[in-house]
Image (cartoon, rainbow, N blue to C red; front, side):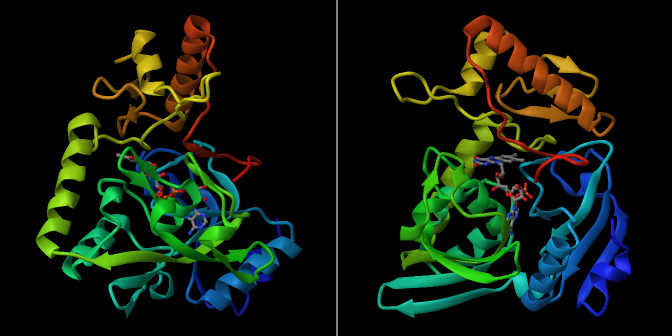
Length: 311
Ligand SMILES: Cc1cc2nc3c(=O)[nH]c(=O)nc-3n(C[C@H](O)[C@H](O)[C@H](O)COP(=O)(O)OP(=O)(O)OC[C@H]3O[C@@H](n4cnc5c(N)ncnc54)[C@H](O)[C@@H]3O)c2cc1C
């Protein structure tokens, strides 16, 4: 690994070596990152990516940590965090009844929903109750029954790993169930298509979507949302991974501090005394039991960071 000076000299960034990134995730467990870097400008982020590429340093992007598990041994290379103002702006461009909102990649979704409701803007309420940032939501095409990120996106600005700033329009992007076709890199901002509406109605819809989620999911526990993707059947329909796990009798199953939620079987929760290892062991156990009882392989939805592992 190149020295910190090689990577960061004269770059406008904040940097924390040996940073406890596991505790920055919703799971709240897991180890440290060799370097946690917060660029103070888009140019600094671009130059950081260029240097990492030249020096063969792995780069991972941390959003709100709501879909992430960091291994107990931590993660190598650079973890980039978008917590400075240049990644947290929201700008509006109103043209008739349509409003384009350019939202920074580091903007928190919960706060954004309130901002839109205050501005009487509709078109994003279906994201209520989904934690994380715009960047993470674009990358994961986050969503649920009421809709997903893709339906609100007009375009996405991204820094590729070469440090090039590129724009993709919605037409050029392919979004599918919890995935999008963007290459690796940093989602710097996304332009969302919204329209004006009665603010009370916008607020009421946000409240309803949020209440529905809260009724079905253990929102207050430490988790990363659904642990597994809903698998596709031979007939091309998706079946609920939660139902398969429930049918396999795994609700409440526990290893160390990790447990299959009794509220929603696709949520694996962990207590603060637990570890990322407990979560990973339990995920493997669930995969094994479901495969043995149904023949279906459950694919992980949660992103896992480990030393030498992928992003
Ligand atoms: C209680 C709870 C409920 C949830 N409910 C739902 C739900 O209903 N539907 C759903 O889809 N998800 C749900 N999730 C999962 C999570 O909220 C989403 O996946 C969310 O989009 C993650 O965003 P994040 O910013 O936290 O990303 P992270 O968890 O920080 O990262 C996830 C991935 O996105 C990448 N990433 C993050 N930011 C950027 C960026 N700026 N540029 C490029 N890549 C980036 C990361 O590198 C990583 O690969 C839930 C999670 C919890 C804890």
